[in-house]
Length: 111
Length: 109
Image (tube, rainbow over all chains, first blue to last red; front, side, top):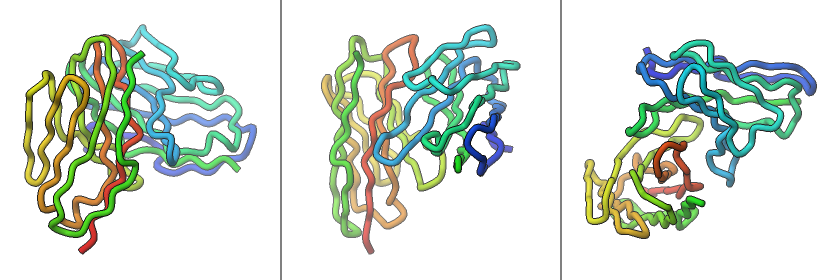
């Protein structure tokens, strides 16, 4: 099994719908992150969590919310999806000193 | 504010043509400089961590070096399978990594 699993891998949804992207990790790390990637813009941080009781906004949190259900689970929600949220979304995990382990990504299309 | 700038944005090489990718940074206190490889549609994969100026690390055809202002990823005699986007990222302490926008490398046979 992959260290970081994201579901779904691909999703097409309609404008205005609520959608949840899920992430689970088996690394045993406390820290988890959600990024989106758009062509030419690189990886941009949406939210991050350093432990189960800690949630922090990243640089582009508007329109998104998160839930840290357990050490291993970190979900990202789009409350009312809009077309400019079409992107590739990545979840990652880390301990305090090493680099990140990324999931395989979720390709989200909002029509 | 921590910043990372990667250059060039895109690089096209012939197979066997060695070159270097640049990662320039400004940071209040560097705790680590990371290099990742990303294939299209996939998550970034960890390559190297560098912790202090003068440090070097190698893996197959790749060698990463670090100075106080920049890091280089040297690619020696590249092959088509080295084609990917290469990302660098800064770690300055108890904050998330700051990523550059990446260099898209194409190696032509």
